[in-house]
Image (tube, rainbow, N blue to C red; front, side, top):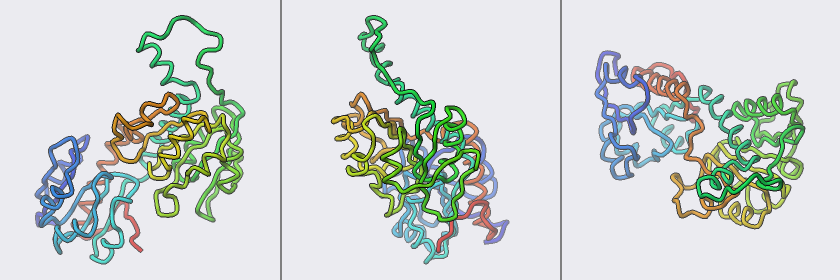
Length: 327
């Protein structure tokens, strides 16, 4: 497709900022108008004849979707750092390039992981619920006792960009001892952090706080299962800002009910959204947020800019600003 021709693009949700206007100036752009994502059937209808797609994690872009788009589909730009919602093998077979939006959400997500850990450690949800329900009667010497952070052991499961940024905040701010895991043999941690690379079993056994930052794949699905939870300290807190499927939620509910661990704080769940009737929502020692890790003005606007850059580059046959390797 030449730079002057107008291609057809489907965007699966309205994005913050003005980045989408750059697409509309040069291409035929259709934006899904609803707050909730298109259903699989609606997605198939809307991608027909498209040359580019700008998608979210909630959109499953499999071979059926690519087939429905037709042979003209050139690029899929995912508004996320992750891309487990896209069938990369199918994209590779069809010569469709795939982009994502890494790096710009690192600080926002690391900040939220800190927020979750602090909130769980100091039992903020339970304390707020007492105020809202009228159960707050007096100042109690033994009421709502939480966990202190200074000098404790922090376990980071997956020491990538976000895991490292999170560790920097916790080690630097609370003088914590760092243990970490990594799937990459070449992974290195800043010497200032003074961390020690260990196997997952040791990390879970020794850590006072465990934060999950690995990518979702078959190897990491239910990485934190019943056995892993049983290996943790009864006083431990589990934080997850990565992907919900990395934790076996049924096992987590049981562990929290039986006080196998002290608390869990989650920004990601399975499914999303999590129904209000789900047991995790009602547990006093579980804090659940609606996947807001990257939800800052700065991060979300920059994600939109990168996602649009990826589409424009893919439509004109140029290198994507952030391209996902397909092989």
